[in-house]
Image 1 (tube, rainbow, N blue to C red):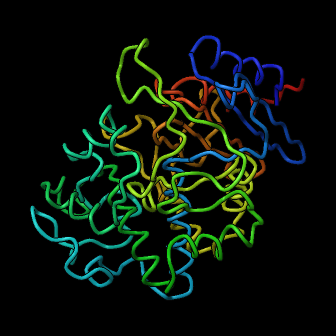
Image 2: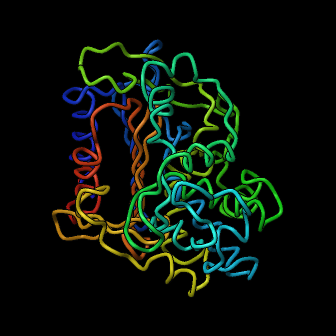
Length: 359
């Protein structure tokens, strides 16, 4: 890994791209590197540490998919089971029919279920300036699904591809039914505790953090570079149940992805299911990416293909990717939610992290 270039890129994210701070941890075999730039707290000027927690956004989906696949391996559910079997009557109306949607189609985004985060009222309340008045609202998973099915289905199951957060709300609800425990407890018992991920948990309705953390900042989706910046560290993430709620650290994320890629969390059959990748149709999500079951892949400019997931939730962007053998993994986060680092600095960091150069 080129640690000099890595640090230069983190500095660029702050000085040129305007993020309050950025952190990254790289693992390459036995080599570990942690770097930071800018500040974890704009008021105190404190720098981020490797122990700082942050919201990981849609990286949550990879955890949720792992839980579903573990339950499938234990024959507590089948990926061919329908949503209706597990959540009777919930996914109905406006072209939605849970009896025609398999669990597998939730995990690979071929269900056609409308994404509740794209509902007009949700966009107003939770993705713009109105969030200031709604940041501590509590929403149940059932309410999120009802919002989704009040809109027309995107397509019939299996007849298209569409990234939908509703898919993983439903998947997390099925985890609770099949595991016989709350989603947060399943995450703790099945992933966090076995891997000793001491900074990783699903907060549910908790607005704060349980440990040291970066503070996070938002322009509330306003496009102007001079839009007011708000400290959005404390918020109720119930609107991201099973989808984007998890809190973790860079070290924990790398430990999780490394274990997943190496096959330590899933038997071979479920591992193959998860990593059966299909190209994402252009214009539907991230061009050039492929998607499996709760995990994506992309080929870097250097030709290296990496696997993982990105995430965005109010106040932060995160990115977790590694090589297929799990020997090289990198976790990154910026504590501002503007711009799109996935198309810039995050990819550049992966190039520097997985290059043969040494500092």
